[in-house]
Length: 325
Image (cartoon, rainbow, N blue to C red; front, side):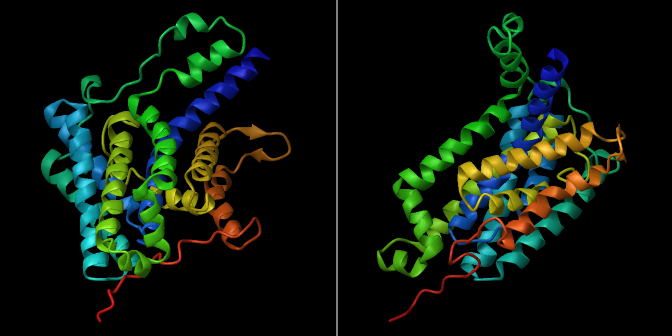
């Protein structure tokens, strides 16, 4: 019984670690799409931030310098996306895909040119990474039945970016639903003409949302290369940006349901790793590819309307053209 409980706790612990970049990227997509801008480029911003953070941390020996550079690069790409689809009213999907393609190619080219390791960055020392930290009394609490192992194995022992990701969810809810900025953000995603008529800048709001999305994607990418791993490797995001978009749609553009969707997807990913090569009764070797595909299958089921409608903001994907009188 104790072994089973410990296995459950370790699976939850792995779920939190895997879900962290999904949570950050999904909240980034939520801000962007609530403002009426489709952000397919989450993947590219995360990948570029992961490379920038690992490269900077490898050169400076500072994880915080890596975080700053990762966030800066991600914001730069977010502003580029805004310049293309807000200022020049370009196609938002094409702009996002272009960012993904550029990031995928440029990170490899620069990695080869700078570090000569086939697109990798050097392995980071512990001082150049965000390492795990035990919370107070974690070791002493292990002997307490049920609650002790939960605190020691699940609550304690994460790096600061995991806790930051979990804290960002209620912060996002508060900003979107309890602040003037959030009210305007939701309004500009539904009816930008009405916001403009009220004398509020549609362009300014959308750029602000993209900057916030850039910050969150920068943290997500930094987590991948300097916390979850100890170096950047080519295409290390492995579709997590698209999975974050799927979680956001699954959560119907709301912070808390999106969090649970990210945790579900993280759990499926963690289980896919644990069940790899495991032979089960009757089934035999479990097809882990089925678990890896489940996030996308569930999103398609949701979009098909089988478990409720997912209605995007009305102005999402539509460039705003100011009416001239």
